[in-house]
Image (cartoon, rainbow, N blue to C red; front, side, top):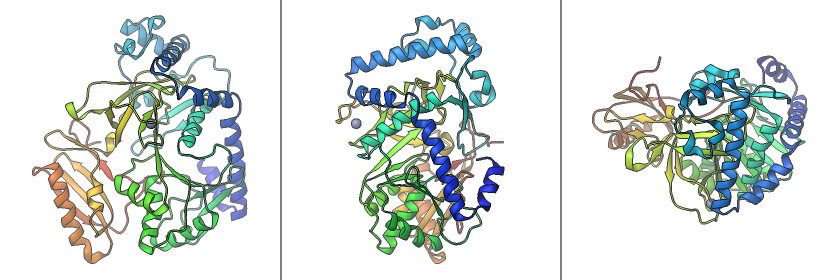
Length: 465
Ligand SMILES: [Zn+2]
């Protein structure tokens, strides 16, 4: 939403806001599910059970088509292939792209429209990544690109046992659904077109959580969708108050790294499984969990090449992705700043393709120790202590961490602080200085996300400008 339309929306009465949310829901539904959507979805429902050779052939066919299209329509990509001495007509698989210089999100930001294909007849939409640092990356897509993308999302809903038809959903995302300064409920608005309740992620304070829980129990959602940190706030409150009357069929989390303690509390308190998604606004990768809980890289969505591991045998990678769904702004060999841990095993569900062991987090969310180790998941151990409500670790210098702690009560700060230092010390070593500070609240990003770990230094050890 632009700042002007947000201001107008904020001044509407609740009923007017519900109507505005529903009108927007109708527009989005048409855009995502119009055109060739059903064909894309049906194809995916079939291809998920392809044999390895069939899937490899499908991926090669799509990669050939995408690469040739990009070199015909995007002068920048044509030059890139020429400079690398690669004939786009001879590209058969990702191994043939290894001579190309990889692109980063900074390149995407810098080049912007220069990466858009010439002569696209359809209307072009711009979507923005909800980046946590710096300016967001703009991605240009047509409605058909969006539909190809959403067909995958619907397939994953099926993996979670959810219907693809309209069903009651509670959504916790980054939209400012109620004005920030609002003190009293309702902190939610209703999209009648999609039977979707949008909840504010910006009002989840102790004073308001009771009202959220009561409302969730009343609407009885089949699906809960959104940021793990928001859903966790609800689940932790329910645990503390002994509330167990919200029973969705499945929970879909996305946009933030799902932490183990969050998964445990949410699944226990809401009585169903979480199906975590990991995707990129640039449509370069989509990873979704199947019924077995395995993180599958959707092989029809993008061709992913793992370069050399960052840490040798542990297998941490920055995936290098070529999108097979975005024809408006073809993405070829784009290196993700996120760190993932790959796994070679096949999944018991029978679907082929690469799988991930877990997602470590964004590069910004990873601490680098003085001896060069990357540590992405810190907080589960903190949360196993009984004194902590929320904690955030910030690497402010190569050899200094600041730990912001919201203890369960002020007189437990010392206990929380000692536990945090003890745990961190065992992970980052003796060289790192660790300072703890007491805070009342941990700030969310402008898009409402919670960040458990923040690095203010570059990977080469310099403090960010
Ligand atoms: Zn599986």
